[in-house]
Amino acid sequence: MDFKKVLMVGLGLCMAFTLIIGDRVMAKEELANEAQAAKAETAPGGIFGLGEENTAYNKYFIGKSYLKPLTSEGVSSSNVTFEPGCRNNWHIHHKGGQILLVTAGRGYYQEEGKPAQELHPGDVVNIPAEVKHWHGAAKDSWFSHIAIAVPAEGATTEWLEPVGDAEYSKLK
Ligand code: MN
Image 1: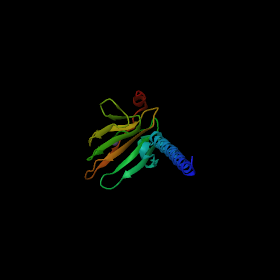
Image 2: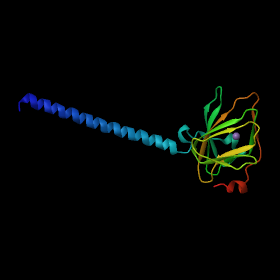
Image 3: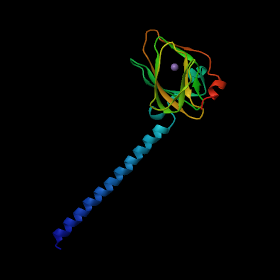
Image 4: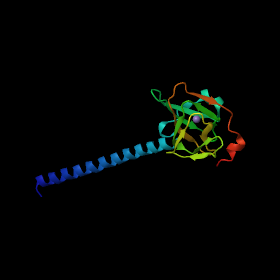
C-alpha cells in the first residue's frame, strides 16, 4: 500500500468516527430533552406550569390551588392546578360562562342536580353562564385545567357554599 492509500483510508476512518461520535452526542441531547419534556408533563401543573399558590382565592377553595396566568388581552385564561383533594366551592359565572381545557391529572366537574363528571387530560368542559357548579381534583391526584373566561359585558363570579365532605368523599 502506498502512502497516498494509507492517508485516504485514515481520513475515511476519521470521518466515520466523527459521524458516529456526533450521532451519539445528538442522541444524548435528544434523550435529555425528552426527559425534560416528560418531567414537565408529569410535574404538578403539567406543561403550562404550576405558577404561584392562589392565596387570593383561598376562601373559595378547600385545599391548596395554584394559578399560572396565560393570557390577559382579549380573552383571559389561566392554568389552574388543584392539589389532591382540592376543589373550589359551588359557584356561578354570571353573563359570560367558562371553558375548561384539562391539561394534567384527574379531577371532576359537577353541575347542580347532575352527577359529577370525571375529567382527564384532553377533556373540554363548556360551562354555560348562570349554571351552579364546582371543579377540582380527585382525592388521590393532582389536577390541572386551563380556565378560559368567556368574555361578556359585566361578567362576574358568584361564590357559594363549599362542596360538602360527605358528597365529595363519595367520588373515587
Ligand atoms: Mn367555574
